[in-house]
Image (cartoon, rainbow, N blue to C red; front, side, top):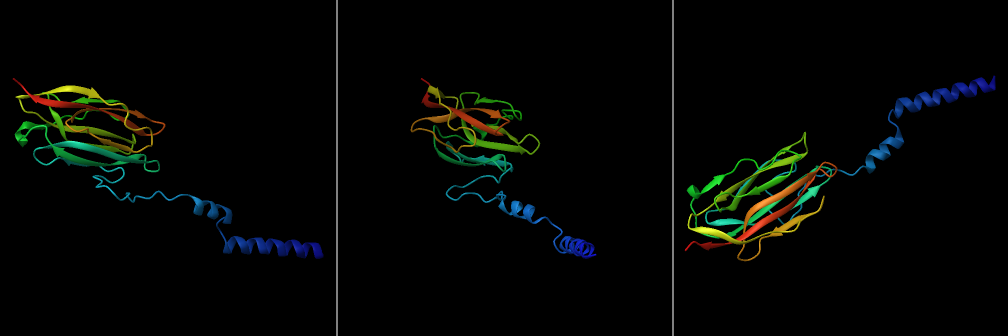
Length: 201
């Protein structure tokens, strides 16, 4: 008889615990330990986009892209970008410039060089949540009497999930960009083509 009473009491206690504490305590603790995927952007740069957001950046008149900076965040599977510009290589007007078509498809390599001996003065990008990748297009400007020379392609400027911080050297100007995409990292690595410019004789 005492055993039956004990069993009933135990069942009542279990029922009471289920009613008062419906969630599993251990699972709650596990959830608390999960890192929060923050949308906050690091200080120290003028980021042109939010995580997984589109952007359009354009240098002011007479300038070309000098600095390309980006940071990858795994929980967002994306990068935020920051750009800066410098004067040169020549003075130009808006009528000397054109936005080119998208240079890549999602998950595919990007191979781009400004046509007509041009240089890069703007960058646009659109992010796809389905592919977890970006498409890029570039604004190129050119002056007929000027030609690129002493061109070279850089080494890889970043690795998967690592920061990109590329500054075009003095007397050189950005004319092309190359990148490949890896689905394991959902990220891109970048190289660039840079040239000096001279007046045609």
